[in-house]
Structure formats: C-alpha cells, structure tokens
Length: 240
Image (cartoon, rainbow, N blue to C red; front, side, top):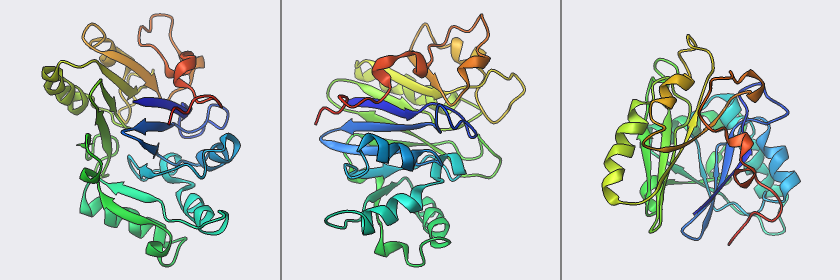
C-alpha cells in the first residue's frame, strides 16, 4: 500500500493545499477527497488521468470543491473520455453526492459512476455522522491489505470511532498507520485536539494533517504529515 498527500492544510490553506490523499491500494489508484485546491494539484502532478476510484469524506468545499471540475475534465479533456468511479459508503451518501453534483452537472450519471464501497476488497468506511458538524454525514476510511492497515480519519471532533476500529484491527496482527486530522485549538469542537491524539501515541503510529504547522505548540508530540517527505507526493512517488 502506498499513501501520499496532495495537500495537508485546512479549509483556507492555498499554500499547503486542502487535505487530500493519493492512495495506491490493491492495484488501484484512489483519490481521497477533492477540495478547492485539488484539481489544480492533480493537473500539476500529472495524476489527473490516473484515477481509478474517488472517495469523499464529506461535502464541505475543502473536500469536494473541485469534484465537478474533475469529472468534467475526464469527459472533455482526455484522449478517451471516461467516467471516474465514486465509491459511496452508503446509499444515502451516494444520493447526497449526486444532489451536490447536480447543481453543476445537470445529469451526473453522464460523467461519473457510483459503486458501493465493498466493491474494493479490504476497504471499509468509518461512520462519523455528526462528529464534525451536527447533523452532517461524514466518514473516515480503513484500508487493509496483506501487509498493513491504514486508517484515514476524515474531519471529526471526536476520535473515538477511529480508535475503536483501530483497537479491533489490532487483533489482525498487522502494522497500523493512522492519518488523523488535528487542531491546536482546545475549544475548536469540529476537529480533534492534539492532546487527545497524544494519548494514543504509545499504541499507534499516528500522523496529523488538516492543520497549519505554523501554529504548532512547542509541546506537541504528534508527528505532522507535512514534516514527513515520504508522505508528500512527488513525481517519482507512484509505484504501480
């Protein structure tokens, strides 16, 4: 398994980019989230035509802001047009995404295919409904192959579903890497405070994203994705 980030910042970070990941898993290339800065990044990196599947954690603009642009690109700016496949954790979330896309793409099914998440073996969703914003559907994702387990939190202010799943996965006896969004603001509420993640460092290999590293307090012990060169996409990254 191979994971690298196309952006590690928050909603308004045009320099580090909105948080999104490029994952190579079981022979497939997956784009995880497609926020406002992601389409330009895909063009710059040359990954724009390499996508097999798309996963979306939730429908805030920093996670879906250029999704419709990406789909239109695949229809009109490829030598051979194709329809990317969005893997939907639930039917209701599939319908949620469909409705969102319909505001900019009148007939979404002409530009994208939807498939249930179980189409891809070893992939499962973590339902974190309401834990980022009350009443909002949100998801994390877990990827498991023969060698390791990778958990991606998505945005949430309560990390318990992530670590409950991680505790169950430990029984499989594989290394676990957790990529968790994080905030340095104790009263933030919509993101997980770094002190909560520090409690898990003795048990799990955790890397934090969706933050501004300039705000990092001196006592932070959680490793940041932005400080790990091997977790940041570069031209020689792809392994397939």
